[in-house]
Image (cartoon, rainbow, N blue to C red; front, side, top):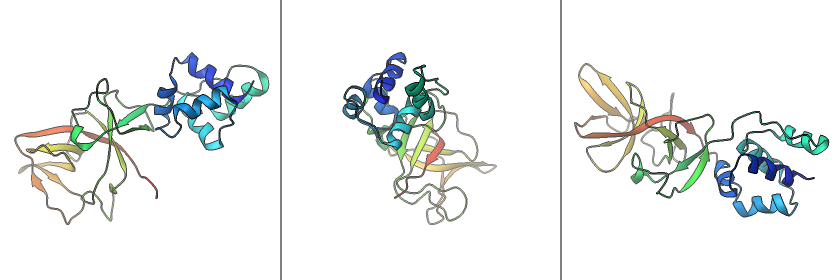
Length: 205
């Protein structure tokens, strides 16, 4: 018995395809590479083994314990949730059953099934103080109802969605950029909310 055999058993117990496990690693481990680990005895790196264990809802320790004792590795957590990363033009209109995402990212915690992710572009939501969304970061979006101070993705009377903070006060509602160099704008009567930001993953260069 080797690590690949254990990973294959767990994957089959969960009825996951190679592609689905790859998606749950955020695409870091391709299906072909996982197949070689499972069937050809290729030893995964420590980092890849961690990603695979997380994707399969177990731990590296439990995999090595099965390797030593032969007792099936315990699944301590739910398998990682793969969130589709999509183009901004598809925000709020993405259908996971028919549309092709750009890639996938693993959610740090469980989100609704219809959640999606976007890659931040530009500096309009970058702030020197407090909450900030740096260009290149990944934001995870759910279709929750926006509240005052929510970070939202919205089409504000145009077909181009933007990331802004929704501010509601006595004078009405407007969309605020965290970068003071960008003006706040009134919320249009035709505004279409695409979702609310639930999490931001800062990508390190």
